[in-house]
Image (tube, rainbow, N blue to C red; front, top):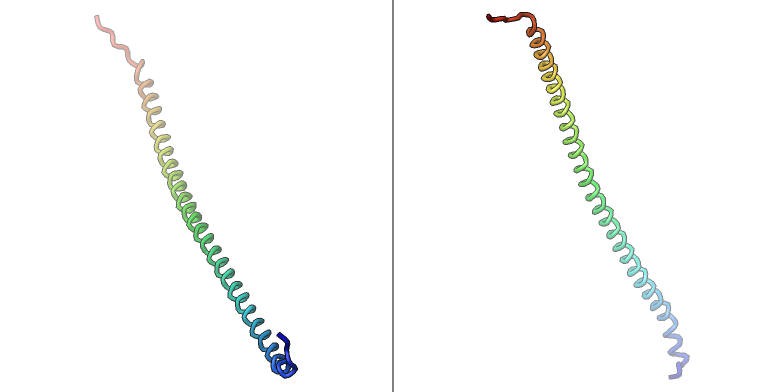
Amino acid sequence: MPIKPIDMQIMMPRVNEVSRIQNNEQQNSLASMQNKVQTNEKQLENSIRQVNSREEDEKKILKDKHQKNKQSNKKDSSEKHEENEEKENKKLSDVNKTGRTIDIRL
């Protein structure tokens, strides 16, 4: 189909308009894709942070429990140590009491 000179005069300004419209559509689609990618990355980072924050919370709870256990163990060990000292003192006092007197029956 041959193009006549009159048709060419009408088509030339429209070519510029069409190319501008196509360029705008491409840029809009590219911009929307970039926005989607950025939102996905933000969501991914947030989900990673949430998991990390939960793990950190669990670690803090475990540390607190561990410290409480240490404190209770220290109390228990100090109580046990005191009980052991008392037992040793009783043994020593029992040893000191025995052998002082001699009971002889005839």
